[in-house]
Image 1 (cartoon, one colour):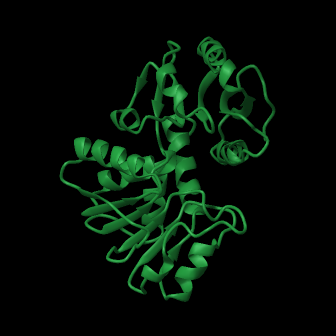
Image 2 (cartoon, rainbow, N blue to C red):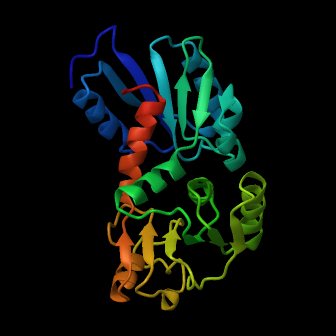
Image 3 (cartoon, rainbow, N blue to C red):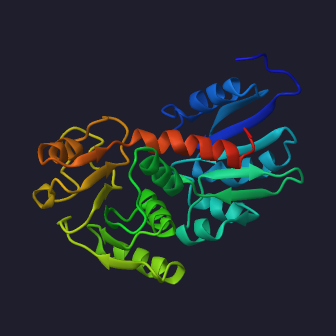
Length: 265
């Protein structure tokens, strides 16, 4: 990395805890690749200090933006001056751009990164039927991105039905042309099956859906990056399904984040 000087632009990432984040390494490498005099640094901030930190970041003229991750994606929405309509509907923001006047513009790019990753892998969601396991933060963002991408039908399956219903209602308001249904653990009858839960992250986790409903005609996609082959993907491969791992979501999202924060052209 080039020497940091008084001319170096700064970007940050806000998280609690912070030790596990990989975004600074990836985006610093991307800036170096593009010849950008900039650096991303981690800001370890708890929920109680978020407001005061963000107020201070507004005053930093050489701060150009920041990435937001757990547990601040929801709280940051009200601390931005402007958020996209989709981020407002999702109720979360994970990327913030600081304008020259100190105002903060927020966007949610989890879902856009997932859809871009699918397309990069040769899977086009437009006019396809999709089964989505989960209704949490990542699942919300992915559901909205899939609806925006033009899926024909989206089935949301979550252990807490009220969360699925809340997501269904918000999707219906913003994307009335997309058929949204509440599903069961059975993913049969869909062309694309997506695990948007954290199940599979730890060894011994239960499967996020009933793999007996999978067939060789389906594409099964993950958002989990480590392990690269989750128990779900292993079960899907056994049934002849085409599989799509979680890493492309991150790769594509990093580029979208960098462009949104004007880190790269």
